[in-house]
Image 1 (cartoon, one colour):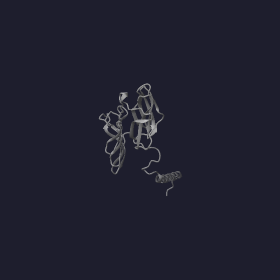
Image 2: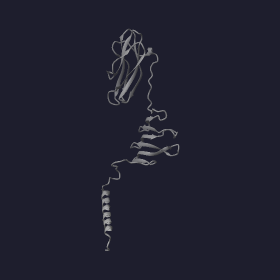
Image 3: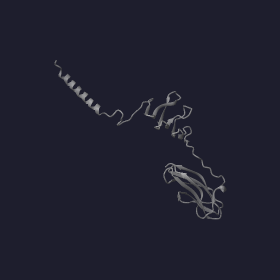
Image 4: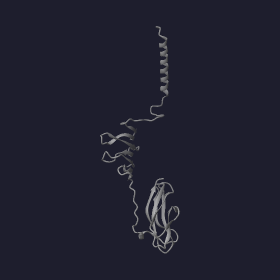
Length: 243
């Protein structure tokens, strides 16, 4: 063997040590399908998708229709395991320049929830508007000395709270009374004083008892405390709300 410079042998041994270290580290690195720290980034224009045996499960990337400049809009699609779309963030109109909309669909493709990106607020569901009788003389009346029902409804609980706005008056200045709202037989707050002037009072928001989708009985009650005329009450508005 020819004589080699000592520094070359040292460099060769050092290189062998480095190769050995790298080989050992390669055996203990995380699996290629795991990210133990940090984040996963898909560059602009890229696509991230998850497929199941039945088809797509989750997709983030370019979707139709195209943006006004001809590039694909960036959207999100989440599917049920049977292949139906459950959630989407995408343009929902014929105008590619309109903002994207969040939509939640049922298993048959019907829209459960959609925002109105043009005007703001909800597009779906359609929430009913409450109407009351225009003439107070048509409002339900009570002459009883004890509280009695003038409105009653059996509702299905959908939100944890609700409020009720009631209009109230008496037939003449000498007649006074009280009104109250009860939920499952329990009065909400203190009774509302009722006099000759037509007034409105909002009761709540108050917690709705029971589990979601359970039935709740709500009543508006009235009674006369003085005079000989009627105590009249009308529900002007009522709605469930979030916490």
